[in-house]
Image (cartoon, rainbow, N blue to C red; front, side, top):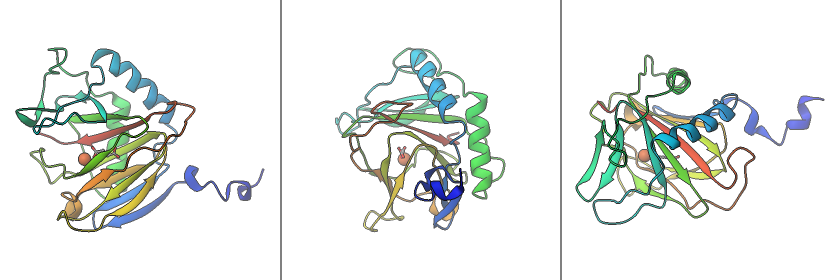
Length: 217
Ligand code: SIN
Ligand code: FE2
């Protein structure tokens, strides 16, 4: 077998694609750990199940979410916040697995952010049609730390905008194993995910899974 055979399947090759100052796509960075990450997510979801959160405006999100780590991101009619207790179970969120911590720290370092120690990992599950409207990640106390986002399963179109709502976003196709890191001058950039197209991945079926690591407190 020669490398040429894979010339048109670059999604398995590691390479860094800058999106702007402090923002980069690390192609295939989590590919080796992909299967293990998917298994761990399934185990976590038996402790703190995926659920559809309601926004403060009363809209039920199409993306199903759960968390692991010291705190988890939650939304309800009262607002958005980080909470140490899973409101669904009344128990603490499952602890952040060592593999998650290590991967997040390595990805952050690759993007130029040393000593990233996340205390929160939001786990998103998308099915066909699920989307995430453009938003800023602004509930974290320490915005000096980056966001590290790991894509697993079915491909998605990620949109990466600017500081203001009006900036025309870049459309960034993300596939299984890709990691996006945004911090520094890009930390507050708007971002979102277009409605998921029907597709299949051997590890996740019709689903896309996404991990976003944050330093919330
Ligand atoms: C997020 O903004 O929390 C998730 C982004 C993604 O699913 O790629
Ligand atoms: Fe986000």
